[in-house]
Image 1 (cartoon, helix red, strand yellow):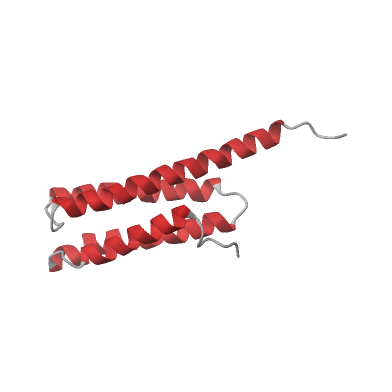
Image 2 (cartoon, rainbow, N blue to C red):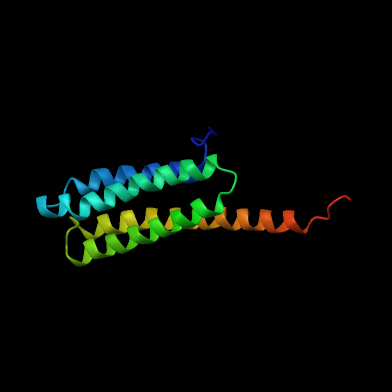
Length: 127
């Protein structure tokens, strides 16, 4: 298995999951076990997708899946803010900032993979 602890995106994913775990504790009981659970489980999914993307040769499919999960997290977080499930707007801002940073890192990684494969296919083959 490839090493992943050194990756900045892994560290960001861990930070996000940690913040989600800590901040969801302050939700009301109803929201903690509905929206809070969804947010936390997707936060853990982000970590597992980063690890998986680093371990496979064809990273594009996993990185696209990660993009989708991050977008779902943003939508859930926005909904939680709208129904006032989050303890404060500062919590929303903190989590959204981490999410946006992770999304930028993911897009950069995905772009680098797509560029790598497109330039690799353009190289002449020795006959």
